[in-house]
Amino acid sequence: MLQLFLKSENEAGTDEAGRGCLAGPVTAAALMLPNSFSNNILNDSKLLSETKRLALLPLLEKEAVCFGVAHVYPETIDKINILNASILAMHHAIDQLDKKPEHLIVDGNRFKPYQKIPFECIVKGDSKFMSIAGASVLAKTYRDAYMEKIHEEFPMYNWKKNKGYPTKEHRAAIRKHGVTKYHRKSFRLLPEQLSLEI
Image (cartoon, rainbow, N blue to C red; front, side, top):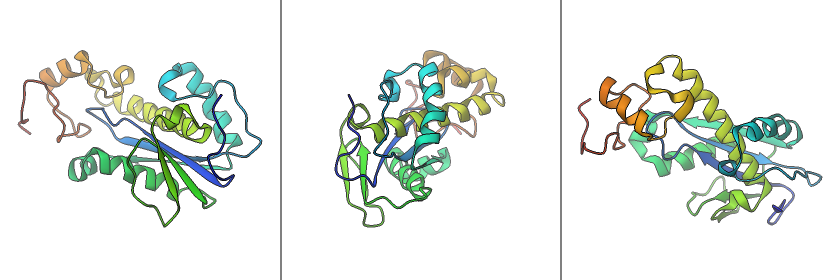
């Protein structure tokens, strides 16, 4: 069973989705949950089926004290690198919270201070704390929806299925069709290329 809080009722959990993708944004969410919140299904979004994530989404949005979701796009990822972009997305998601948290819990082991709010990095926090797990579900579902939308513009990459991750099919499409404005040019898009002709 996931824990509700680490230190405080006024605590927000934050997590990101899409760090390892070749295309599309890195997306982060921040979530504050009430002390009455309980759910037996909620877990790390990677351990949940799409059906379960989509079922949890409206429940989390309705029952949250507040939440925020933010995308950081490929041009910024290419400028500041994926780690910094992931942390920036988390900061932008926290910016959107209607209530200022007293404490932040962050999935993973890297973060940068946000407005002097105390924070704790928790490795695999999305399988330990409800607010981080909920943030992981929000980040994943919002990012998936974005990738499905841009799939319509470039259907040959099949982003509605692979969501921009480096599948064989996605890499074969890059080899055949080249790169788009949604691809991360600083990433190694094809294994055999050390640099990409843009």
